[in-house]
Length: 596
Image 1 (cartoon, one colour):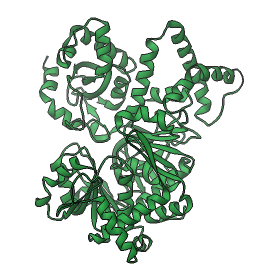
Image 2 (tube, rainbow, N blue to C red; image 1 turned 90 degrees about the vertical axis):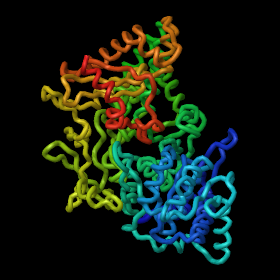
Image 3 (tube, rainbow, N blue to C red; image 1 turned 120 degrees about the horizontal axis):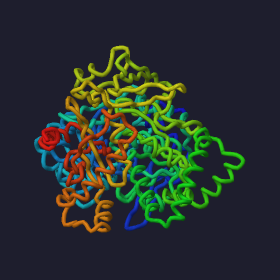
Image 4 (spheres, rainbow, N blue to C red; image 1 turned 135 degrees about the horizontal axis):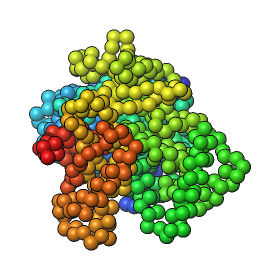
């Protein structure tokens, strides 16, 4: 791992794994791949073309696309010129994209298709620095404002004939140089551009690989947005550095199907994927004959006892080993098949993972290694290890990262992974970054006896009731979303007399229940108002609140008629609920809860 910049990482991998499969994507129903050597040829040509278009060191070039090989090729071409990649979530609308493009002083933007190009065409004439749109496909004809990626590569090949060398062009890159600008999806106001250097990411990649093994034998399935630091670092740079093969999922909706097709060994995800898998398994079991249900719950009990060994990278022995082999054959092997049959481990981040769900997968010997970090920390601060993974914690700090707990409980972090600051925003930088390098995460946490970090909540999310009780909403929300009947929820109650919740039902499951119970299903609105449905959810909420103190329990709730989404503004691109947005959008509904 003798590299100090991303271009050096890139060339190391090309030289070592040239003929190995690098990327796959589905084209016309078939998986089509590129070797590392072929990736190099594409990057070389595209970089030459970008230089022909005037891209020079420190220039900003944005990427607006879903995950695919062209995203990765674009990124490597940009950074090998010493330029800066500005990542843009493909779910953003035109005026949000314009803010990022203008704030970052982006010179060129690479877009996926005509739909994304149209968003940019709406404002390109009023964008002071943006010169041109490069589209990844050939659906748009070249003109003054738009040029295809194919045309740019052709320009690059001519430049290569004239002596252009991507290795030479990357020699100007230094570890302290700016690598990327990633704009945080703030819950209110404009996002802030996080400045990450080559050294920030390289230090995180190297420390991450020491904490968790990755090799050329591994197969990744990538579906979290490459625009986000988590997938960028783990599923993009780290996978590439190890010579691993990356398959790009067709969409978030096809992940389950794609797992069965590509048989991944490593996957990164947010907890929602595991919650859905868990709910589907329990739903299926609830409809099985009594004897199968009995076998399932017996196997789960055996797995729970075996997990105490498995979580320490050990195997159960004696009678327990025999029972576990039977449980694996009858029950757990089927669960493993659902995730492709070859998973060595999942990596979970972006939001808290329910302890119960982690333990459920551990019982089947499917480790979920939960980690913790922020965009501002490149992103990993801590992660569980395969040698010892503990649910309810996010693991110990990775090498080279210091973590301490402030007097008020806030988690502080210092290390080579911490950002330079927010782009053109020294005031916001000063709010979170101390002169001696300590970064304020905004999260509350504590260490356990093994030095494993436990996150209790966001500092700003802590609910203080009118009775003076401090309540962390995350554990309550985790308990609720474990139910197969609940897709999303938000617990509220700050400065109020009691705790309440807004709940988005899992409509697919709810409609099945409604048909079985003779409940009219004409539309969402009518369904959530139905007395039988309200009674069902009363029971669901009551059961979820059993283990909480009386003052913590959700006393009242409202069932939402429409799911929250990125498009309607309630979710961030990594599928976290925007608390302030939801509270503002449904203020009248919330006020009504407390007025009754």
